[in-house]
Amino acid sequence: MGEPGVEPAKAFAPEFPPVRAGVAILGATGSIGASTLDVIGRHPERFHVAALTAQSKLAELVALCERFRPQLAVIADAAREKELRDALRRAGLPTRAASGPEGLVAAAQCTEAAIVVAAIVGAAGLLPTLAAARAGKRLLLANKEAIVCAGSLLLDAVRAGGATLLPLDSEHNAIHQCLAGAGNRKGVRRLILTASGGPLRECRDFTNVTPEQACAHPNWSMGRKISVDSATLMNKGLEVIEASWLFGFGLERIDVVVHPQSVIHSMVEFGDGSVIAQMGTPDMRTPIAYGLAHPERIDSGSAQLDFHRLSALTFEAPDVRRFPCLTLAYRALAKGPAATIVLNASNEIAVEAFLERRIAFPAIAQVIAQTLDAFEPEAPGSIDDVLAIDARARAQARRTLQEVPES
Ligand code: NAD
Ligand code: MG
Figure 1 (cartoon, rainbow, N blue to C red):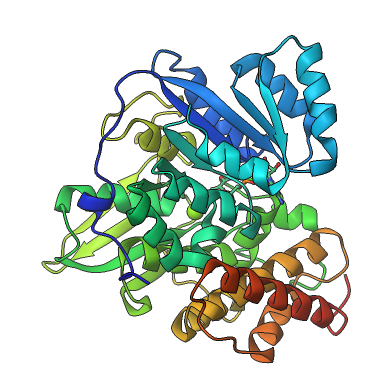
Figure 2 (cartoon, rainbow, N blue to C red; figure 1 turned 60 degrees about the horizontal axis):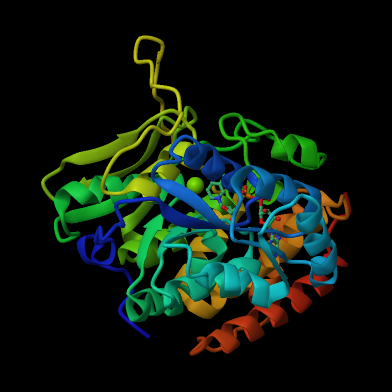
């Protein structure tokens, strides 16, 4: 296992192919996938789409293939490969079809892609994300669950494969931008992650919160899982863990501040008292464009920040009493890398159950807390260990679902 965190200047070295880089998008039919394709569509002279993957939305995947003409299309549902192949042929496309976990890994490694956008949601994205790192790609990481589950193994793979890792998560992308000027992290006192506070920031009684309310994010339009994570503040908890791996800081040097306007995407405080912040309209196309073109800057399509209309930027401490998931994440980070796998797996199970209206909103934190208390696995030494802990935690969390309040 390597030392946590990487010197940004080294790990993010800009060795970028100057002409028409191929991009593989893992999770192309999702929110990050759509934003990535929007940015790529604005720069046909710089990028082409090499591979696209989807879980089950086959018709959407084929429509994207017709528009972007990738070399490879992958449907994660292995039973539907023939259906995909037939649909691509009917559309008159030369795109190859693949499926299942091997297909996702093939997309991550495909020779036509210099850049891989890891935008699958959940631990399901772990193996293809690792494959992209091992294959030495420029890895644009949105799939925070992958680094939460396998931080040190993923960073080792990045180093061993000679890959370049650039975070797309807006907070980490902001910190990357703030650190870029400093050149290294020696003078840094702490990282400050901003959190919008989510749609329930002012809610006092969570008992009857519905999936629709939890997914109605005030500033960002995102997939349903991360939207619920934003409502519980688990998203910020996962991001604290992500930041600790990406930038090599312990939890005592990563703070969270609630900033409801989502204009400052995160900040770095230096030893001399300076604080550098990165700002912009809340639009994921900005960090995506940064990742695709780094170290250059390209048009992302996002709106300019209008300072004449920005009336106030406000800040407050997160209310960990109402949002216990943030504390659970800090606790898991303090315990170590096995606990963060358990945290993530139990959260995925609990959020799915909440979205399917099987458990109440406050039960999400209860399921995670009970699963974390139920067992303490040893630190993982390999990816097989990570997958085994993940599977065990999911089974434990499923048992816990029976004991918490129904929706
Ligand atoms: P989404 O639900 O909109 O899209 C998820 C994508 O992953 C889809 O293409 C889906 O087909 C695919 N997928 C889902 N389950 C899969 C599986 N088991 N196997 C293979 N493919 C599967 O999610 P999103 O909002 O685009 O988020 C994607 C990732 O990016 C998440 O990890 C999220 O935390 C992170 N992220 C998203 C945003 C955002 O603004 N949406 C911001 C920061 C980070
Ligand atoms: Mg984020």
